[in-house]
Length: 191
Image 1: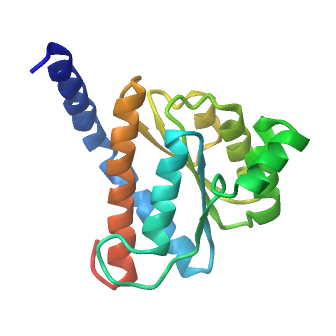
Image 2: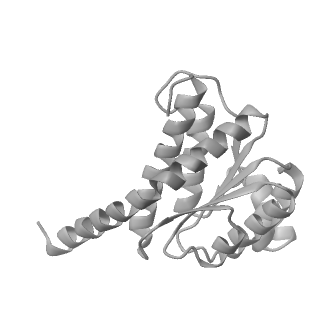
C-alpha cells in the first residue's frame, strides 16, 4: 500500500477519535430536530459543493428515512433548485443565494443546518446570520474552529481537522448519527 494511503487513513482515524467528544452535542442536535418537527417546524439545509451534497443527504434522510419506516419529516435543501440559485446569483450576488431563500422560507422555530468545511464561505456565513435574525435555530456542521460561520451558530458540530476530505467524511457520520436520533424518536424508541 502506498505511504500516502496509510497517512490518509491515519489522519481519518485521528479525526474520528476526536469526533467522539462531539457525541453529546450530536444527540442534542438530533433532539433539537425532533422538537422542531414535533411542533410543526421545518429543517432547511445548505452548503456549497461537497457540503451541498451533505446538506442534500441530511434532507433525504429526513424526508425518506434512515433505518426505520416512519413518516416523512419536513426538510428542504436550498441548493437543489438551479433556477432559483442561478437567478439569485445573477440578480444579486452569490453571497445572497441562501439569504434570499431564507427570507422567503425560514420561520421562527425552524432549524437551519449549514455544512461548510472551512466556515468561511460568505453565502453560508450570511445564511446563518439571516436565519438567526428570522428566529430560526442554527446548526453548523463544520471543521476546525468553524471559521466566521461559528459566530452565527447556536449549535456547532466541528470535526477536529483542517483537511476538507476528513471533515466531509466525518460530516457523513455526524448526519447519520443525528438521523438515528430522529428515526428513534419518530417511531417511539428510546435514543
